[in-house]
Length: 222
Ligand SMILES: Nc1ncnc2c1ncn2[C@@H]1O[C@H](COP(=O)(O)OP(=O)(O)O)[C@@H](O)[C@H]1O
Ligand SMILES: [Mg+2]
Image (cartoon, rainbow, N blue to C red; front, side, top):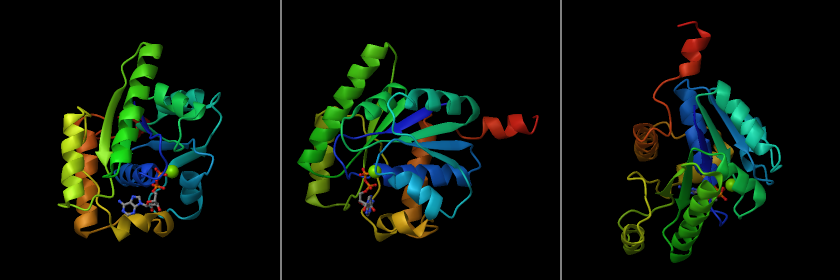
């Protein structure tokens, strides 16, 4: 159905955290989702194997630039969504993961350096899409926001001025998200849960995450 790659040049803006959120939410919604962990640190696949406690989804650790595209395409044929978590630098595996994607999500935090990395990642994605002669959508998403601080307001203004397409929804800096890497469960209620819901709803609204599972109904013969 669709391949969504989460990418950034810099480490640390929240790629793995957002992959965890998207995967766990889609699994909860009974979508057939597969994740490819293309980061040699294997944070996503280790979390999936050792910590995650929600409804099951498939996760593959694959860091070879030669294997990622084939794996993504074959998973795409039998899944509602394939999400690829990438390493925080512009390596070849990351470039392949961006080129095979239908959509690229670029998390950034509210700092000048991050705005710069988002611009660089977007330029890279555009170049790869041109080389592959296909359309790849790119959007930034703000993560680790401290809402209503001057820095946040400044970052949002800068994004608009730089013409970087950015999701309306954002994810705040919260213990619940910081703890996700060792808790294995998404925040179930409160402001953090509401943010996750709005984030996934927007991804569905722009068509990056399917509303319902095509594969589940196919498998049930409907
Ligand atoms: N919204 C957030 N609130 C609090 N901590 C966060 C948030 N997003 C990420 N973190 C923390 O920031 C660190 C880097 O996030 P991570 O998702 O691993 O980034 P990346 O995969 O881009 O390197 C991790 O320790 C993670 O738990
Ligand atoms: Mg990561």
